[in-house]
Amino acid sequence: MVAPYEGSFDLSRNLPLGEAILEVIRRHPMKETEVLQALCDLPSRVVESTLAELEAEGRARRVEFRGQLFWRHASVPQADNADNRERPSRRGRARSN
Image (cartoon, rainbow, N blue to C red; front, top):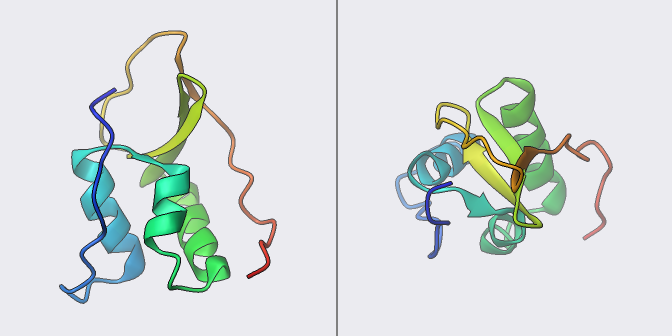
């Protein structure tokens, strides 16, 4: 797996949320907790439904790497090792704000 993304989302380009997420994770996978934290100003249901949509469309993947959950772009090849496993999404369960 490529080094995880560190930094913040730049939403100044006025991209739809899904496209903004894909722009970041296309270059570097991002910890799920960091995705949620970086977008904490948005309603959690919007962020979670966007991630679920990206996953359902096959554009993004939620994977476990060394015990942590990451989001990565679906076009990025997945390393084949025991530390890197795709995890089914828990999306769909609403998280309260």
